[in-house]
Image (tube, rainbow, N blue to C red; front, side):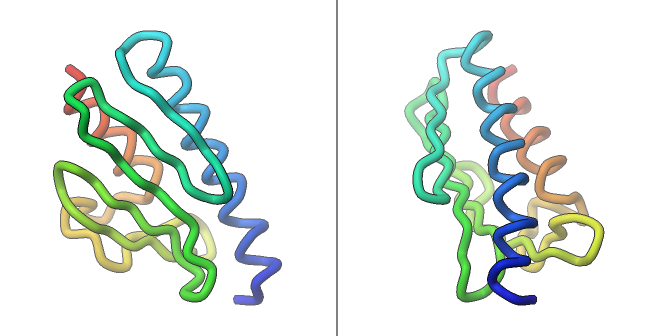
Length: 105
């Protein structure tokens, strides 16, 4: 995948995840910030998710304080796990939304 195409696929996904996190800010004691392709989500217990674009590998990397590291690649339809044991076949959005909510409830 060319770099321009990668950014065209990754940027909207990062903004979608930011919107999800901002909605959580209204209900929970979380803090979200997207800056220079890195999304930080600080949870109420002080733990932090870091979700970032990794341009050289054309992946989106996830560092979860609960399940560890994961890497997601564009498969032509969505961002699928390349290495993310906790994702168990879920796309990036489903994985993040389910895991974050699980640790907020």
